[in-house]
Amino acid sequence: MSTLTVAMISVSDTAGGAEAHTVALGQGMRARGHEVMLYGQCPGWEEHGLDRREIGLGPKWSRKTMAAGLLRVPLERHRTQVVADASIYYLQFKREQIALTAPLSRRAPVIWTEHGRWMGGPAGRLLLAGYARAAEHVSRVVCVGEAVARDLEPVIGRDKLVVVPNSIDTRRFAAPPAEARAALRERLLPPHFQDRRVAVLASRLHGAKRHDRAIAAALASESALVVVGDGPDRERLERLSAGSADVHFTGHREDVPELLAASDFYLYCGAETDGTPTCVLEAAAAGLPVVAFHGDPGTELVPGCGGLVIGGPSELTPGAAEGLLELRGSGQSYVEQRHGRETWLDAYEQIFGECLT
Image 1 (cartoon, one colour):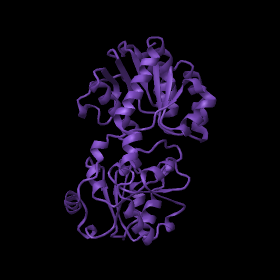
Image 2 (cartoon, rainbow, N blue to C red):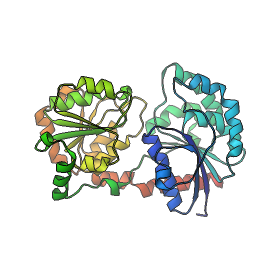
Image 3 (cartoon, one colour):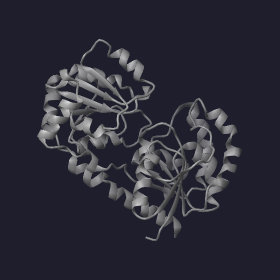
Image 4 (cartoon, rainbow, N blue to C red):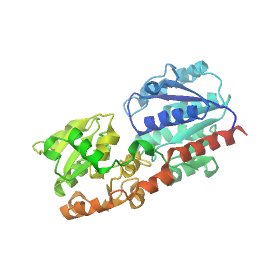
């Protein structure tokens, strides 16, 4: 493929799955010889030596910022004048998609990625009309799962939708040998966790994910729990677990692969708008069995990744948790084959190329 110039327009100051996706795509495309420029900001972008320019957009849309954001749309469309000509324009957040797609599409194909299920409530209904109008100008919409595509098909039409499952860098999450794992446990886990069965969750702590279920399940299984991450729900979760020496909060950490490798199984809780949870893929690549809850997005991954889907926390009995340990490593080949980074980059390159023909 000839060299592409990919302009990614994205403004976020919160480290999450979509932001990690952006950084990985930027890194991967650059490694394949393409020119990549981010207009806006994204946690982790500059830390990987990727190029960025300011565009002057307001804050990412949320329920709190949306009203003011809608008023800013004419100004933000004007801001696209600072974006250089490119082969492809890549957008993934609703504000950029709704406000910027039409003017950018006059210059080059616009590609969206959709990371989760369509939001409900008044905010979702408010966005839908503007989203449908903007979709008239988009060339392709990359969905991280079939459920995401089904949500969008009535609005966009199937011909513009393509499913590319999320990926991870499996090299970062490989399970270590027993001796190295023992050293990680000694270095990273609290002393009173050393001889315990240890569950872990690594996530942005948001109330929509209902992580209190993970705490309750760990305690029901008589396992210790390491909670990796930060977010608006952390204070409530700490109150819920107050007085229990079996729950340890680490806050935001950069050594998540090592913390996974030091643990015995993973507890996944998802919000109803989540798409394909990369945390499940990372845990399985690290050799961990995964426990998930019926009804959460992404639970279809669990059989392939190795683990157990339960209806409620009380179902994770000590015996069930002990049985999980026999599943260590059972999901590694599944993740490598279906969610490896190179296959994922191949798909994006193909989509970008098709939009240029």
